[in-house]
Length: 351
Ligand SMILES: NC(=O)c1ccc[n+]([C@@H]2O[C@H](COP(=O)([O-])OP(=O)(O)OC[C@H]3O[C@@H](n4cnc5c(N)ncnc54)[C@H](OP(=O)(O)O)[C@@H]3O)[C@@H](O)[C@H]2O)c1
Image (cartoon, rainbow, N blue to C red; front, side, top):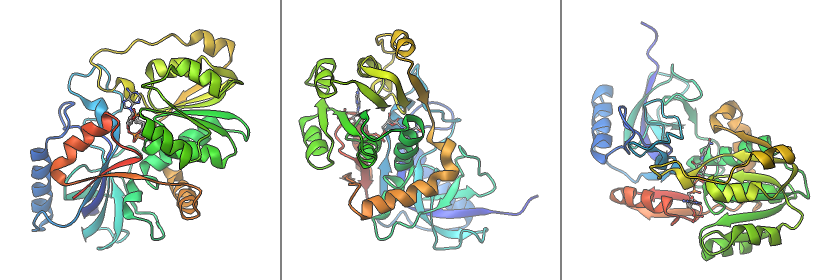
């Protein structure tokens, strides 16, 4: 038998990245979460009540996990992969001493056991120390300085490779990832057009985040509005939503445009695959580069991104907003609300 390397983590902050039970595609019921916590405590020899203020935050990938959905968009490997931040309470690994704050992906529970031997990029047991947030809220560790921040940073910079003066479009623009993408594009000297689902979000993007233009896809003809906002065409598109909106945008791209395909939230809750205008003609004639990604491909570089994102926040170049819901029992309402677009910025549930 190898050395025992498990650590027991009491969660403080968590990001619901993927909600799946071990055997099917359902969102993890609260009862299962509770049971897991009890088992974790039992197996680790820790006896502790369900206590303390815990912040849970969440990402919409859960929407991909509806039972019987034809689109198992986000790979689950049959396990939960929510990211979480917590404090080590018991340890068999000197690299993670008691009291250290860590980020991992073990799901909604107050306690979890992490096997630090299992450290593949996509492993549910993958764990790293909470980055130095320099007095920023620890909840940023699962938001702008966590997986969503890394998604925006690498997914945009590595795939779109923006050049100052170019025109960038981002969908899901007022969300956790999209709001950071648009601001990074501004930092890089681009013209930025964001697409979001309410007038309040449009106002926030234009007036507070400095987007050059924002469009409400629920009330506007996006094809016509985009022609007006980007008369010289689009060079980079960061796609959070997929579907017909994306086809419309991609058809307005310039030659040698780059598309970073991050998410497809417009289809996560559909029982049928949605239909959208075909893109092959545009891809060929405009010689576009379209690339999908999973942010874990850059996991070893995440610390670089966290450092730069933290500095941008501290120096006011990057503004971060959290949409906070109070109470653990509201977590599913908050999740459904996020899928319905109620969140501005990163959706968080605080208990
Ligand atoms: N590839 C990766 O490694 C990776 C990693 C993390 C996240 N993601 C993906 O990135 C995307 C954004 O994630 P996030 O955490 O930043 O979520 P988010 O944007 O904070 O929240 C989801 C937002 O999606 C919008 N939305 C919902 N239904 C829509 C529809 N039918 N059409 C257009 N927009 C819709 C809603 O805003 P509106 O009010 O604007 O509709 C909602 O607020 C998701 O697709 C997620 O799966 C991918």
